[in-house]
Every structure is written in C-alpha cells, then in structure tokens.
Length: 247
Image (cartoon, rainbow, N blue to C red; front, side):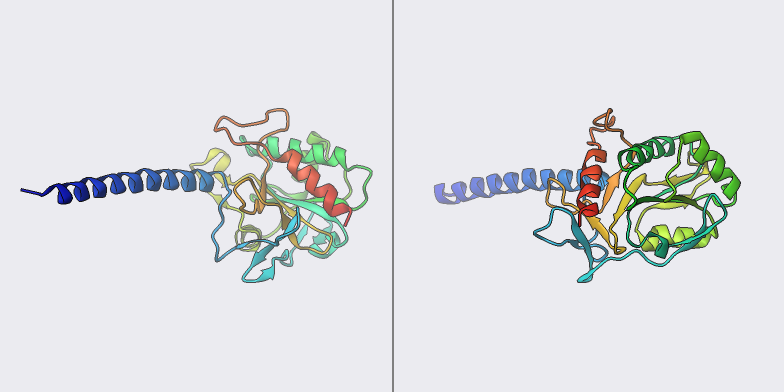
C-alpha cells in the first residue's frame, strides 16, 4: 500500500503528464493548421527571410534565393527569359487556361494588380501554363483578351512541360502536377511569388514569424477570408510590391 508521499508523487506525475498531453496536442494542431495554410516551409529548402526588413530576402542554405534561368514563348510567340524581367518587380504564377476552379480568381487578382500599377513601367507579371500541350500562344492570346490582360510586361508563357514543371517545383517550390482526377486534369497550389528588380525572391513574415514565401492568390480583397478562414493576402502583396518598386 503506497505511503502518503508516494501517493502525492503519483498524482503529481499524472498532472504533469496531462499538462504535457494537452500542450502537445495543441502544438500539433497549430503546426498542422499552419502547414495547411502555407505558413510553414521546410528548413532545408527555405529557411527564412532576412531580419530587419519588412520585405526580406528568401534565404536558402545561407544564400539569397534567386529566380532560376528560364526561357519560354509568350502569347505573342515571342521568346521571353528571366533576363527580360531584370529591372522590374514582378509576380510569378502557375496556371492553365481551362482551370475550372482557382485560376479565374488568381487571374482576376493579377488583373487588379495590373490596374493598380498600370502607370509603373517597372512592374510585370510572369504566368506559366502547366498545360502547355493545350495552351498554345493563340490560346493564351484569347485568354488574355478574355480577362483584359493588357500590360506589355505581363507574359503568359508556354513551352516544354517538363521544363515548366521543373521551374515550378524545383525553381520556386510551387506545387503543380498533372492529375486526371483533379478538376480540369491538373492540380496546383494557387500561390504567387514576388520577385525584385534584381531577380531575387522576396517575402515578409507572417503573424507567426515565418516567412510568407508565397502570397495566396485564391482570395480576392473583397472576400476577405475563404471558407476555411484563411485571410487573403492581396493587400499585403500590393504593399510589398510598392516597397520593392521604391528600392
């Protein structure tokens, strides 16, 4: 039969275990929620942004992450490379013209950015189709006309599918894949990347102190939040573009 001292120790261990279980469960919940919301990025791939700046550099293995070289044909059948964007602040997206879900919202958000910065020669957009077999230059031209894409520095690009997927997944770490079971036959994340005039990927930190890395492009400013309670980031993106344009 346990003594009074042993009994107290027993109950103390029980309470400590309960507290650890409660806080551990809460921690797992918060991490899961932040991963789903795109606020946590693996350390070995993108470790953070530089401190002391509102729009910092994305750091990968101790170095500022730069946009890799690319070269594709745009909607006018003109060969466009990353060098054509040097000296400009631009937004990067991966989309496809027959997307029945998030792409129309993403395009509308980018058109809003186009209108916001239409008098600034140093702003641009780089849109890469993840369905290049269908999205030829003529199809991309029709898509641009449909949505009112008029900025001369907004290039909708197509080309070799393998190279586009490599650019998305290894260059930007933006998810994109062909999936016959997904709506439209393709699946992608709906994120925007922000690039500065020198070709570096830039980001600010979120409310948890993690780098945003990407800006969620699937919610309009008018919507405020989506059905999952995720806050839109288009206002934040506009603010960050303005800051980079002023650098």
